[in-house]
Image (tube, rainbow, N blue to C red):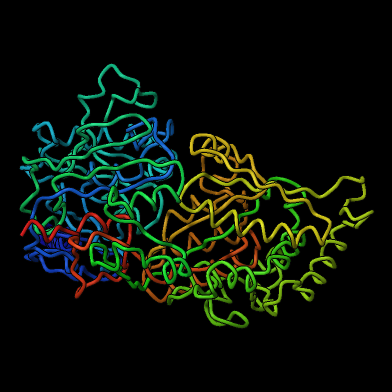
Length: 609
């Protein structure tokens, strides 16, 4: 008996040792983490591939925003905040490389490790990590940041926190988050949450702060000066703790970044021509081709740069609020899409230079394929066949016109769809059975896109008149727009969702039923679709790139056939007009091309050499 006991114990010990060994392999700390596979950069990388590690430091750059601001806290729901602050003044545990689909490298954290199925993630802080006031970034700050922003912060942060079972310190510099759902992406999302200083907020209401309560960050830049609604000056912290990190080499090169605020785009563009602004992004290809030959360009003081990319088109257009009748009827939405004469409008406003978006992920491997769904994509969609709208399984393509102003064929189809939905023209006005007229309100924000969006809607309004529909265009300032958008107070509004090559949890925030009626959510169309929920769940649980791609293509079919948005043109290339002394690594552009992180983050001034 004794020998059997020891043999059994020995075997059990061997098994447990083997299991422990296997677990330790999965749980080894690493310098980075990728959604699929391994990070492209080795542990001893010198700099990000699209940064110039030898870029000179110094100089000043001035950028322009449209509208104003009344808050400097980008982490709460309250207030209108300059979008640059989150990216320039605050850091997370890990930072993203924009030359890979979705890979993070250590920033505040020196390493990351996960469980075998990424059911938990653990970060170890760098001992040298500091806030801008010189105080160390601690595990206590990390835990407080996750809990506070996850419960009191902006809605975009709360969805993640609901998937966290617990957060705990596992050492003097290490913290672990354990998740309550199966979702491989959560380990990466955890690494991207902003980290704030706990002591700053003792005795204060984090969700209801005054403008002078500027969150202390740990990034290269700090708010040095501001005038509410007019300008903000950011200064590079001379004592920035991470200046020598490989992830930071060649970034944050300007000593000063000033953000000026203008009433509209035309005033901003004139300020740029006069030299008051250092650069502008141009989103209209026709204007880029015809309006950028002013004197400063001719003399060489201003340079024109085009930045290509390989990311999905995303969705840009005009979204329908399906919470409101009759936009809750897909036939009505289909009719309104047919009435939108894209070919004529695009030729009129952009010279036909910008191709149309054909689906939410078009232009990439993630986009749906033409024709009927096949293979794994069809397998994923078939259980929801009864709820899917026409085109999801069979194949869907946006209506095309002959390019003429009248668009007779599509207007005829639009009227047929409206008749089927119970609408008839009476004395030139489209009315329902109760005699109510069909009226649409499109809400637009006063920003850099308002002129182009207004021009689109003015031409569209003429087409709707032929159907007996009255279109009202309403333009408001940023503060009013933000309030109305948050409360879904519109029939239609301008819509833009940019996607990465690794879409994930944010898709639930964009299309999930849980957010459809939540004020301030990004689900502007108010969609509630079990098929969409299932495709997102499949994306998040996929353990291979092929399985993930099939799920995204299936999601793409559900979204585009849902007829929630009138798509317009895609931004296939970034166009930046800038001071000629501003430079970037043009020989090693990232796969994501231009983005809010690209300029000014990796640019520099040649004048400083």
